[in-house]
Length: 533
Image (cartoon, rainbow, N blue to C red):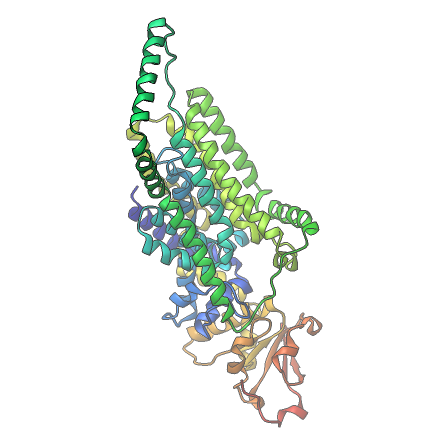
């Protein structure tokens, strides 16, 4: 299947997933990018200096909350699907059958869609930048290696702006591919054993003598020959040099851009003595979150299928090639784990497994390379072409089985069911702000504004919680006498560690409802001038 046809297939699958039951598990991290696009776009995620907000930027023209959510989700799903194909295309070139990357990536995605939980799928496709960054970076590497350096450079810079940590996945991938591809190119072809005879040995000695004489006579030209070999070496290594140079350049651009961010984060390398515990914690949490519910068994089954197919069909060469490519992907994923476990940020976030989700994706892809490599080698050339051309079809079927028949009404029903527990009371109470816990505020704010927009109202409700500092100038512009803060009835104000930085006026309870508590500025503060900015 040609790349353009593949991208059309992936776009269709992304739309089907987007209009299916994908939206039933949204949370604060997945909805903040939508609110950024609707309320106040900033280059980086609110109150951070990394994760360039490319997808919210592309969705800026869509002002309706539901339309904006659907557009951002479709782009994220499309990128998350394409990331497997992009990384597979780059990693498997010259190491295996040239058509293997499409069936392998398609099979890996089928397993991911079938076994990943709703929260895992949401992290890969939308809530986190991993799918988008690996899709941009993977296709950027493919294009740069093919000589389309300018387009590849743009994609790689965007990838590392979206997620600077993509360097720790793509960098080892480039270096490992070059080493394996070079070894495959210089490996001697298998030959039949020579017939030992005295005549053959005499002929071999005469040829060696003539060669030595030729080299002695041509000694002055050896320098020229060395220069020519050097030029050929540079030409051969130029694609890899471009890829590495563009990766490092994109990383430098992301570091430079982060220095201009309004909010700076404190990143540091942990003491080496803490690394093993962090590595183990990340792997343990990833096992529990991603692998224990069937995905690990599917990966092991894939490896076993590949070995059995190679044994039954005597396709040992295809198995060796697939194992080499799988080792490359596994090593690149391991590099991601090693780097993430050495940084303080994952530890500050309880070693959340999402930080090594790209590594899990590479391991899944590698296991499917081993499964499909020997199987593809058993097919004739026309059937190999057919297998590559139909690679995305099973993924379409699995997506429909997992997410159901597309329905815009179904999407709205899922959002109402999962996000709307407090919406009606917030609207009826006349609240202007929703305050409290991060994981409760942003879903409520999004859904309240979604319902108001669907009713044709111009009223807007603001969120006051962690990551609301960039919109502070907007929600503090509400006249203090009109401010009403809705708080979830089961929320605990003692957990509001962020409130001191917001400059909130003292609040008092106005009334209690079934699901929310309405707060207002205290009487002593109500008459004071409203703060701006």
